Length: 316
Ligand code: GA4
Image 1 (tube, helix red, strand yellow):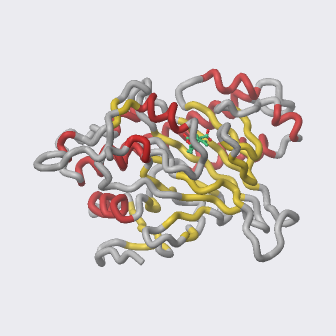
Image 2: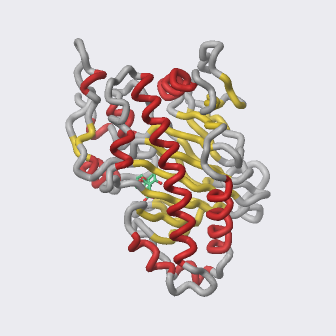
């Protein structure tokens, strides 16, 4: 088990960052180095945006399956049911995946009875703008904590009009009939996120687990009033391995259904993903070959969920 210095607070083993406290900058850096994961409280994302999106999502997922299937298949955007990606991954999950800078996504929802695509679009836009703002504040604190002069070196990638960010809402129905009491059904199999940073919010149903350095899976207690942030593969590369993209997975719950919404902040497609020059003073050399986000994404979509996607880009 990793022991952090006294100043770090934990919530059941998860580093806890209180955004209203002045010491959060250094604590975020530490959490990214040691876990690649932390919980955020005292954020300023309006509860109204969260509830609005949650109720739109519940409305959508409560529709009859043939209606929902009209918004699928997820290619990668749209409605997906059990199939994740296109290389054979399966989970006990249904989801909506959209690109955050394309209005085109919502046409797929237009012919679904009782669902107004305009309401979904507005709810996603309000929520994503607020969460993106928080993600940018976190990335600016990280840059400052890493003693990088250009505070917006990371956040500008998410703010860019061409930022290739995605948003997903996952619904894990309770799986009581599917399992006996001793086995767990995988909702979303273990994986790391390819982007820079991911911000997750869920209802109060458990399921999320992160992989610790000692190889144990740690269950993350749910908290509907907080956010959970994780380092993605691209941020691992940009910090030359100093921050770790954390492996995580979701187990389906046999009693309650789980609803989670995740913003994946990514750079523009043409962006070179490489260690930040100011972190590379002295003897250091990059652990990774040079690649663009487009190249990484293209390669990621050929992999299975559990694969180590960065290995192909590591220098030997
Ligand atoms: C994992 C993180 C995001 O959910 C996601 C996923 C994507 C998808 O569901 O289409 C991928 C997965 C994720 C990584 C490997 C590939 C692509 C499914 C898959 C098997 C939207 C993303 O960007 O990468």
